[in-house]
Amino acid sequence: MQYNTTTMAKKEQRLLIGLVCSVCKATNYVTMRNKINTPEKIHLMKYCRHCKKHTDHKETSKLD
Figure 1 (cartoon, rainbow, N blue to C red):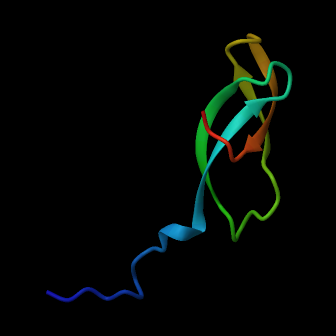
Figure 2: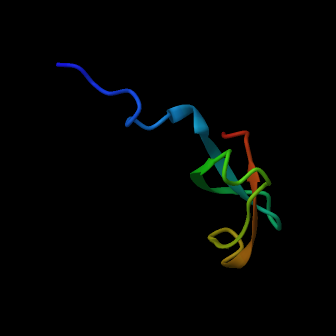
């Protein structure tokens, strides 16, 4: 059985990142992003369970 390599997805384009709360600096979310389509850092309003409110979460490459 032969596989066509042109139809398979490339894994090296996706980066595993963590989202850190800008208020309490807790790592709350782990997600992936495409480094080709989104070259800038991600900033999202997400719920922080430590602060108990929606705060700005920034991307970090360091995962604990």
